[in-house]
Length: 253
Image 1 (spheres, rainbow, N blue to C red):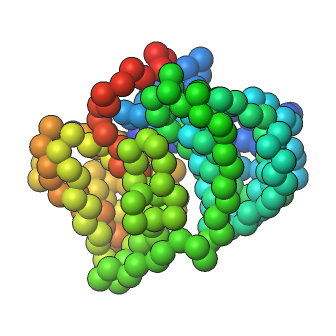
Image 2: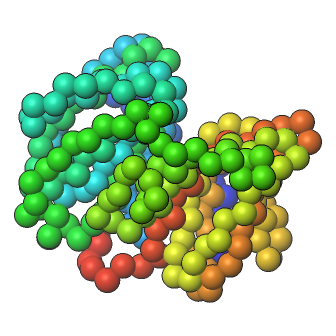
């Protein structure tokens, strides 16, 4: 099992406007510098923070499945499909962009969100009409497992189900607690540390985790991972599991 930890300094950077929205990008676009280009069909992952209320104007997308997950604040959405909505802390907006649509996003002052792109079979996806769906925080199941809060965001047992084989969890680990993740054979795990610090354990040893870090785990065999929070410190992370390889061609970055 191979574990790599990438600090914020190793991740891509970006902004909108004159810096009204700034971004750290664990996985960036093809023309941007970043330590990680993709994780299987996980194509792009940005952590956007709004310093003032600002709208990213209408722009086009096609093919990709795009999830905007609000960590804090409010994100507005409008598109050429006729949608005009807002979602707040803990909610998500999902665009399966299909044959193409334009959308705009407005982030209120102090808002933070993840925008995450998943790559289905693009030559098939672009033949399907685009869709938009929105989910509020209360719609996501929250499990408490040995004191750890696990919010199910994407997957067969979660409200969001994508064409791309994917699973996403928002995990809060209190101090002196740990959470076990069973990684199936042929899959990879990518996780961003939202806050706190802790450790990621595998059979090979432990790696330290700090706020903003991006962890990527891959293995040829099934195995167990364990995330732990030390005494006096909690750990929150958002983790996504995807196949390490897929049976269709991926966009060449």
